[in-house]
Image 1 (cartoon, rainbow, N blue to C red):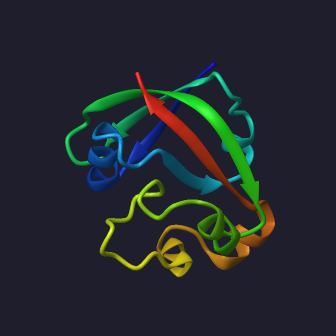
Image 2: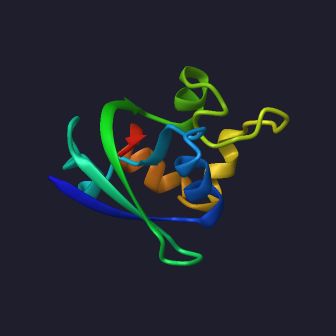
Image 3: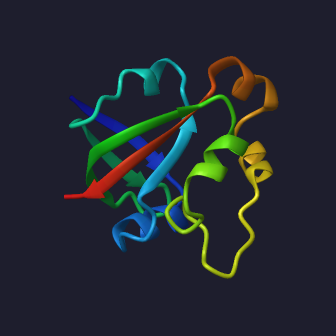
Length: 111
């Protein structure tokens, strides 16, 4: 199955460079249909460029705090010299949404 997702330019570039190998999302209805072996086509919201990725693994967590504890900060999109803070995800998702759905770390590889 093929899925489509939008990404901010910075995250898109890191996926293309293969430094960001984990895409973090809510485990909502849309993400619950993703399976290992599926394809995700990411679209850069800055320039509409597309990148096709293979889903390698899925990791479910009740919160971003737990997700951040289990994955290397570079793999989830931070630079080596940046502080990885799960509160950063509150810019995208409300605390209530996170509690309702939980979160998923989608391990990907560019095709």
